[in-house]
Image (cartoon, rainbow, N blue to C red; front, side, top):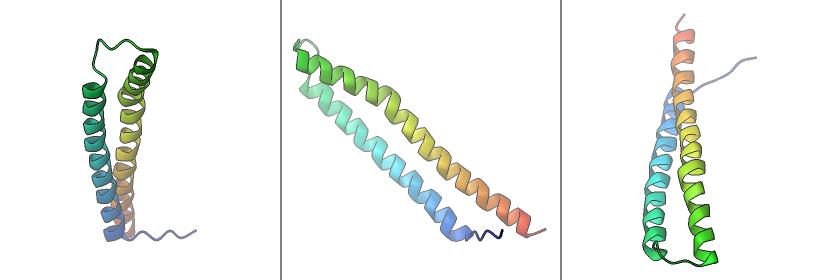
Length: 90
């Protein structure tokens, strides 16, 4: 089986992944600040408690995990380019 890797395109894809992750992280920080500002501590309603608890779980666990997986994809893509380039030079 032959695999063709275009180093420039693959490297650009990895850079785009990095850019997307950065944009998502920035947007999530803005959303987190908005949620904290608009549902401040001390408001004791079932709805506000549920929204805040769900958000905190999502923002502190699911989001960082997904961002790390995306960052790892970019790293893996760069490593694949490096390895393919080294292999093709042999």
